[in-house]
Length: 237
Image 1: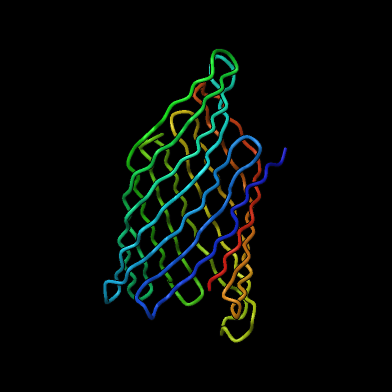
Image 2: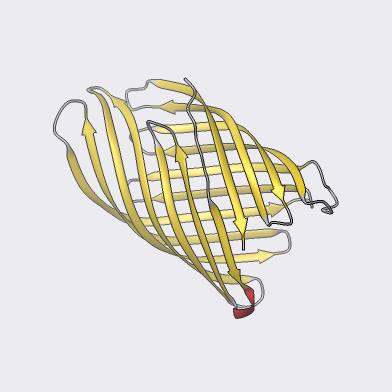
């Protein structure tokens, strides 16, 4: 059965003259049995040169289902957090390192036994790296960790622009490859596939579709695999 994954609605708003930046990022990625939704306002303060401090608040909702010896357990985990980042942009390279704190209100509904509600707290850490290898080729990697539920999320990819290579037209087509790994002690997921992006250059926007395959590993050592599909949108103001 085909499962769908969507990562959508990415908006950015920047005020360079004041030396301040404001961004709003939101999205959802998942299917009927697992997913992650979030909203994150971001404020950046230029430090001069190529560096900036970035303040980020996040509201999120994580849900997933995993199999164990007693059957299956449904987990829902809304959360809220804040982080302070240091961002450096130099030439074709942009990198960000962040540390913060989050609280998650997690509910576990096992197929056998009572419902369990816990409040989880812990630090967060994240690193981002974007490298413009050429004017047409971009490499990127993002890794994040939440100590509250010991959840790791990592993605790496490469994208190559194929059309409008002189950036004179309004639209450009790009293709790429990506791989993602995520999970904790409950379940782990690995996925790999390709992406197609329509860059709307004059509108400062892009529309992205992705597809591939996901492999899931559960504590009872069982493995499940299925296709995935995703769509994403980015708009800068």
